[in-house]
Length: 470
Image (tube, helix red, strand yellow):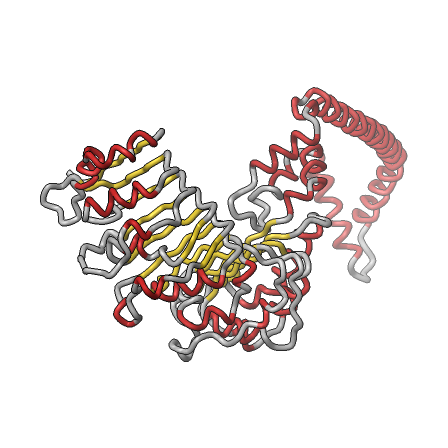
């Protein structure tokens, strides 16, 4: 009640002070009493404020001291955790080995993938990851937008800088069909050329290869002193505006003296354009997943005297467009002294599986795999040499047959196997046991039990048969 009365008096005094009129006696008396009271109270309030300020200052000093103690304790806990953690006792080389095996199949410059993700685990992991150059010599780039090229260029430079002096493996996929990158910018050309001296393995997955090669042919002198492997996956069109024309001559491969391994899909090496691209005479490993015409496959084999392993998809549906192989035209033999593994995926007729190899002599061939396409059921009488002409497989140790036998003629089949005097492992896969199937191979078992097949079975140490159908 007293406080309310005092507030009312103070309000009356404030109102009276705003005018120029002389206040009455009551107001003057109230003003004198209020002043005396305030003057008397000020020392007490100032002393109280000083006491509180001193207490606050003391509490702040205590707060800072406690905060320092907390920080010191937290640091002690971290030090102890590092000392007690199991990872502390793992040598750096073991961490590097673990990191290497944790790498994804396609390393990319993303923080959520190893090796970058491992660098955030602990300081021990960070030191191990950034000290291991082998973790940074391979990179996959998925370019979905030409506008990201500058950013990807910087990220790639940072990535490969950690590989130090190691040779590099770079795989690039263009995830869009636009030709903007070829027509509007030289960033990619500069980016690839700056890395070309260090690249050991290059992979390209592109739309419109003709446009890409034309783009790479301009304004740059290419040098690939360390390029050993090249993978190429192309779209279904040569160019954005003209599908049928072959790609232009590719200067990018003129300085690939050490290129030894090539893997290509679709049509880059089809027909007469293949000789424009690759140093065939120095290649040792070839995978051609495009359908190669049989007569053209012969030409490729003639170009590759150093071949050690090859996988080819051979198309013989259109053999009538080329001369049939006659025995008198096969007098000349092309020797492949180093070929050890040959994998043939055939889109052609039965007896051509072995007969197509007659023009060649394979002195070191150890493994032969023949895979006939499921869709090929037709028969055609071909003028292939008989089994007595097949003399290129003396060194063959392993023969794998998938989706079809060497021939539907059992005598021919047995004769071929009899010529393979060193075969010790025979694998026959996808034998069709469907009695109503046109692709059924009952001669498999007939050949194994035939009297003249006794020269085959005693030589085998491994025989594997797998079945398909009902």
